[in-house]
Length: 114
Length: 115
Image (cartoon, helix red, strand yellow):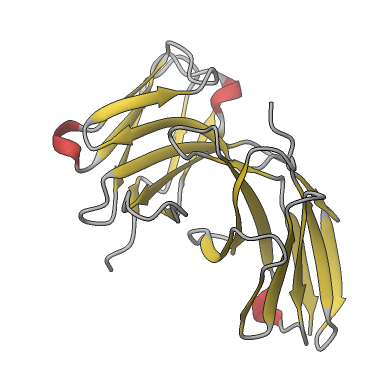
């Protein structure tokens, strides 16, 4: 059973604050690490697909880093805005998964207070 | 809207009833996935289709669950004799099946409540 852990479970920040959260995953059989943002009543939205150790990706105020050797990824949000409020999910893709199904963490629920 | 759609968005049923959900993937995506998210958990894989062929099923998919994807387009997930433990968000995702990073595009989910 693959273990994908996310911390913290939930987070409240003031508008304008920067924040970050962690995803840890198995360091063996790594294929890819996905980050999704899931707002209430909407579809989960893909943020990043990360594959290479040391990779860093950026999308506006959101960025992510990847360390496949130690099995963790960080997601950073700079200058949080109320519209960033959502649950952020990471998902691990195992190289042994023939169907390429994703193994998700439980998510980090971010609330940005205006 | 050309994204993944799911119907219904919400379903309330009584224990023991059968329910069926529908997923319409992005056109020409040949991979289709069903996931289930229960309270406090992340989405968990249920089953996978490559075109019309169901290639993998999770141990979570008991014999009360059946999924189909006729003609390799839309998919249905049926739950027979529902139990309270089936209450969850059922998510569908599709993928183009090309490109080894396999980005999956999700629908908004069907929230099932079993009373």
